[in-house]
Length: 530
Image 1 (cartoon, rainbow, N blue to C red):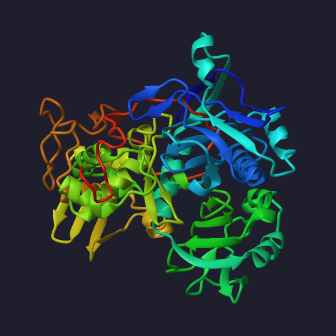
Image 2: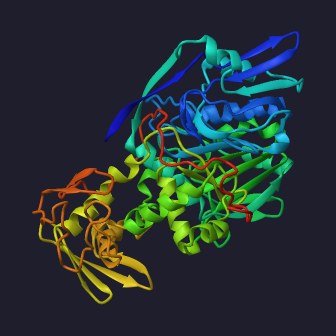
Image 3: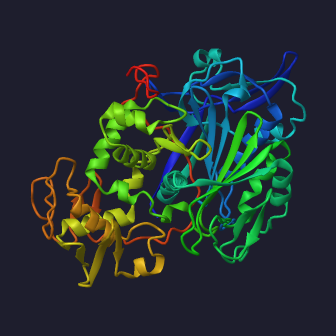
């Protein structure tokens, strides 16, 4: 498993203080992305929370997920949450160490008072003493919130005094991206009133040991509640590993409703789902992977978008038009960019893989944010994508109408058929997962050739059916030779095949400066002047 050591640094620990003037919650930020580029310790908000108890419980729930492993629990997980200022709201995100649970607390405009919300994304320090202090908030007395350093701290401190270094596995990065893409296929399936939501959640099994999840669990709307079912009937929602919803217990007494999201059920295979607690001025959402024993990284939902150079170019264009919008309007982006809505959607998926957009199921829309780590590794190190590019590079793909033939390095021939735009393959991977975890490497290779994707760096020549792709100087690589991919990454032609998508190891975060940024107000994506 590929991983790197990521570091985050804060000027001081986050702290909850009490004084004669009231309580003050100071959340310290690390290096992050802003409209003007990378910035040390950006400041996103200074004002009051309208519901302090609710906000404290929601922050603790997000921190719980960041520190948790719901599979292989003997291993540790440690990553501070990510905070994004979207101009009208604050978003706190985290991803479990096992790569199977994504959490987000949206503190909406009605949950904030007395201060403007900035724009940008970075890590935020949530330490153990702060967790203890937040858990003791027992009243709704005014609570002042500061996200970022105090004004004096910027000039009086010479350097960071709190540093954390943690491993950041590639599977964890891929899983964070996959969770956003998978959620984009969800629809609202049920909404439970507060009392019924509490009864349903408290009745769920909480065991998380080995063998706790013996198979897919399903629930269907039944009046004001959800009823368990053993079959994936129409309208059902998969509840994989119900013990992973335990973080919702933090906010149950404050919830006004529970919303459940999921994809359209097409077969009995388990699926991901999202569970949203509606709170006063806020929303807490947990997204669960299809199985507690496997993270999002093996689902393959982003591979099609990564397989073409066109999507890469479109993504760069769209990224320039983004300015930390809380809700991205695809139609407006299409007008501003001159692209079709289909290409804009593909570009947003691509941006999701590099951590530059997330997806809000409550508003059925993407939002702009820049995760503070090198998420472009998702593409460079994706095993299936590397293997597919290598197959194309060695001339292993031949097309004959709707049939694609892929000759593997060991001489085995795999046949990929195109049925109304859906590719199927004769390989064992396809036979096992039937597309449930995205396309296999053979289908990806065929799709690359059909779309004229180049294996060399952007600007390289288009690969034709049965022909080998040229490298930087136009040479045809031999089997097993290194192939230079877009972005400069080098992959072996005998790259590792697709992985089963097991849960990831513990992560960490570091701010990285992304490409061009748009300053809020210079480019509008709301139908106004651009």
